[in-house]
Amino acid sequence: MTETPQRNRPENPDTDSGTPLTKRGGGDPATRGRTTIADGVVEKIAGMAARDVEGVHAMGSGLSRTFGAVRDRVPGGGKSVTRGVKAEVGESQTALDLEIVVDYGVSIADVARDVRENVVAAVERMTGLEVVEVNIAVSDVKLPDEDDDDDQPEPRLQ
Image 1 (spheres, rainbow, N blue to C red):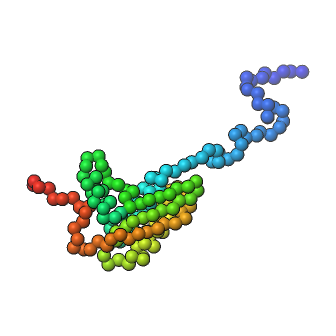
Image 2: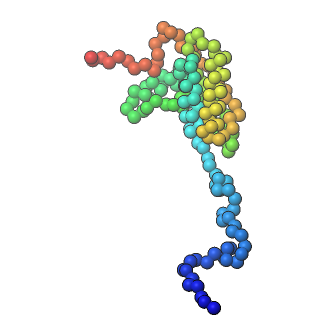
Image 3: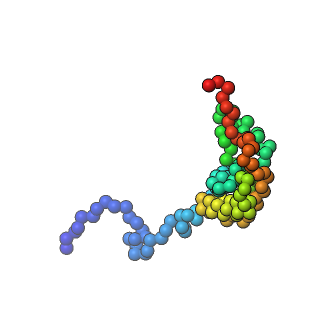
């Protein structure tokens, strides 16, 4: 009888005993742990999606846009993507309230429908949350000859 040399290898009791391998940790790795999404994350996604719709001039009420314009001019203030957006986020669902300003001449019903569709698609795709409702309040209409609150003033020096 000849002996074959044994390699140094760790013993695996599951395979050495003839029993099949079992997964450690139990279950699909995607189900291990919990993911939470902050309200602000959903608000940013919804704000960006709403602004992408043609006919949406701005987000938020006149007062919030005025304060936002001041904040935008402060160094480091930056534009608020969440202006005019409020989200309530649960474990698997979210509800959104949007306040928009539309351009004069567009169909408000069509713009609201397009905003709702775009926001639902973006939030559900990016977060996996079910959007149960998107409430839209149209707070103003931007007339062609009105000054825009968000425009930068002309420089005093040239």
